[in-house]
Amino acid sequence: PGRLKDKVCVITGAAGGIGAASAALFRAQGATVIGVDLRDDFDGVDLALAADVADEAAVIEFLRRAREEYGRIDVLFNNAGISPDDDVSVLDTTLEAWQRVQDVNLRSVFLCCKHGIPHLLDTGGGSVINTASFVAVMGAATSQISYTASKGAVLALSRELGVEFARRGVRVNALCPGPVDTPLLRELYASDPAKAARRLIHLPMGRFADAKEIAQAAVFLASDESSYITASTFMVDGGLSGA
Ligand code: NAD
Image (cartoon, rainbow, N blue to C red; front, side):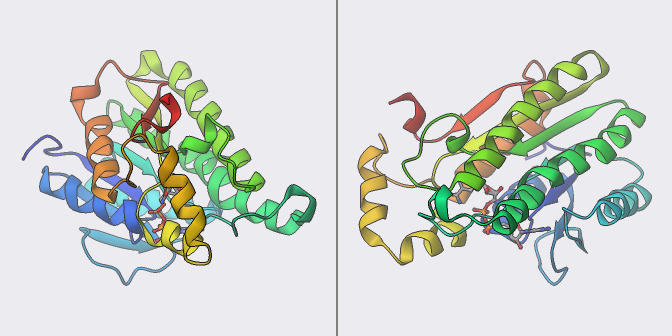
């Protein structure tokens, strides 16, 4: 306990699998957690705020609320994201579907960094963690072109911001989970158990991650223990991308 003592942390997608596991672990390590999700009727945080992270006015407002309530923001964990239907070929991907995924997964990260980093700078710096995915660094053999493209862009954006702010006390890293056993993944594989089995074959550890295992990496990146880590691609994928 105490690895995140006195840190004020904003976690988006805090009602979801990885977000809720992270909120719990962050708080267990002494952090104050402001959780953001589409609805505010979820537990496990110090302050729950409802916002669409793709909406610029909403992003500005939840950051303002967090700052006003706790006086500072030390950690921004941009974790909210959506995954479209699996196995939709690029040939069948509508522009509307493509755009919604870019808005929720990429535009949101841009907005949260653009409007969130000034708060971190104001109070001496901090850590930004942007959730990308293993699909940002390797072919996933699933045709989720809009998702893959959005996560690749999150990775590139994070690297660039990590470099830009390296001398000003704000670290920015891309956290890349492998397949995690969350509602998001369960939904994707429910329709096709054979696909889950195929995915497991390629996982060196032979199992999906537990959300807590992603949260543990997020705690590290949020804490001062990772003080020399920025602009990094932080894989938490059970060896998938290394195999
Ligand atoms: P999840 O669906 O359990 O949680 C995502 C949360 O984000 C939900 O609570 C949802 O309500 C919220 N959300 C969605 N759109 C939003 C919006 N516009 N504004 C605010 N909140 C919104 O999914 P998860 O598995 O916990 O995923 C978290 C992150 O991890 C996502 O960015 C996802 O792409 C990424 N990821 C997940 C896996 C996996 O296998 N589960 C693998 C790699 C990366």
